[in-house]
Image (tube, rainbow, N blue to C red):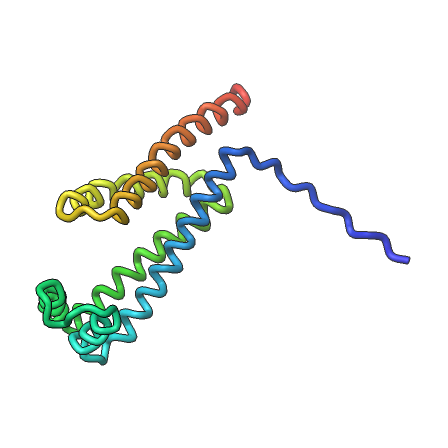
Length: 171
């Protein structure tokens, strides 16, 4: 008869650390979305973008001759294969950053808290500019989520720094 394997004790995870892990999972989901977008952009490399977008507009039940559709099609017509490659690289770079943040936060690494705080805060001005240019509820929700992440991380990092100082032995 075999004896059961000993159960490893899980390190206690506080409520605040659970939020950090949740933010990490959110970042990993964003990374997955960016990877999907990047692959999609690469798949469009050798296709007629105007034709693809026109079919997409028709599939949405919109008039491809309408003002909004023409605006979009005019912008899409300016994207050449070289520019599409640049867009793909930027999307994959964003995915790599989100993956770095997400993995670090899920593993509860201190450096990841700082990286996430700095990167998320650095994009807030761009999000505000986008909202000022054209308000949509999606942009507002994303701004509020990212703002909440930044505020939470500022308080969390400060709290953890105080705790680390308290637990360090005096020299």
